Length: 67
Image (tube, rainbow, N blue to C red; front, side):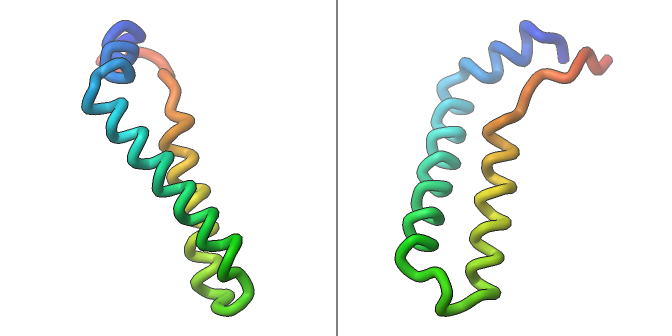
């Protein structure tokens, strides 16, 4: 994959919808943590980890050609 292909992938309507879904999921987890944090520490940690993982996906960048 080269930079142009990566840019095309990021501009794809399917990719945009996927990233919107991830953004919405992060928001939902943050709201849930904001209202329920402290009651279930293990669940809080799971949600925090999910937020970190989903954010990592959103921050995907092109890292060079892979042929």
